[in-house]
Image 1 (cartoon, helix red, strand yellow):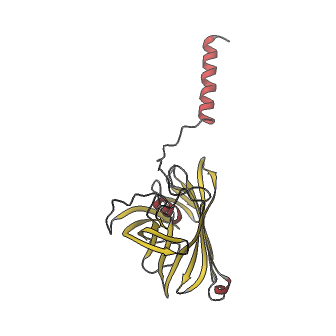
Image 2 (cartoon, helix red, strand yellow; image 1 turned 135 degrees about the vertical axis):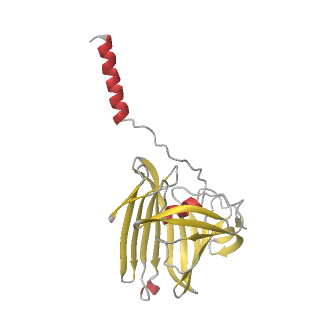
Image 3 (spheres, helix red, strand yellow; image 1 turned 90 degrees about the vertical axis):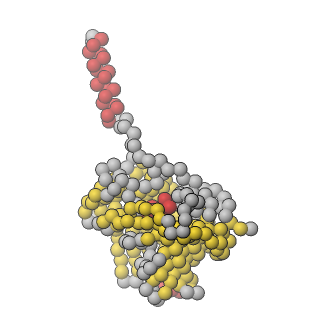
Length: 263
């Protein structure tokens, strides 16, 4: 084989390997995350009035490879306690696969079991092509669109220190077949005490239009620790016949020390 033929052959092999085995790197954003990591588990009592109606957990059990990227597998579950099941039984589960570098979702699942009502929904977010692919169709999405769970975790990484009361952070949320605005309104600071301890907190209000974690009428307020973790410690939401509170009872696997906790 002549030198020129050998060179052409080597260029062909190089091109083949480069095109098939070594695709170009994705040009996705990167977000610094000191708020959470794999292994974090947060447990809440869900109270209706003075009655503990259920238990809710946020959990990051593992990192999973999805669409060629590492993603946090995040689950959120709400189950009523046995003593409340006869009134209204709930077995809800949400899952999101959150890109570990860019903190945007690749997949979202919702499995609802509330009384006689049930719904199963899933969406794959093709963040490269700008498409959400669901069992009900394919829809255009803006880059880095969120689902409701991924938006919650992304919000934990924001810097709220320079915000004024009523300032908003703008996000986009996809649910069912549509992209919705999802603003996060800042409400200031407050010290709250729950079963897990006493914490200095910031208060935010996600202005959810669709796809929320609760069927609400009115505001949803979230108290998050005023430190790098921004760990949620309290949630208050209005429902048709009153209000539901979620209060942190236990936590483990944190990404750092909750420095806002009062001794």
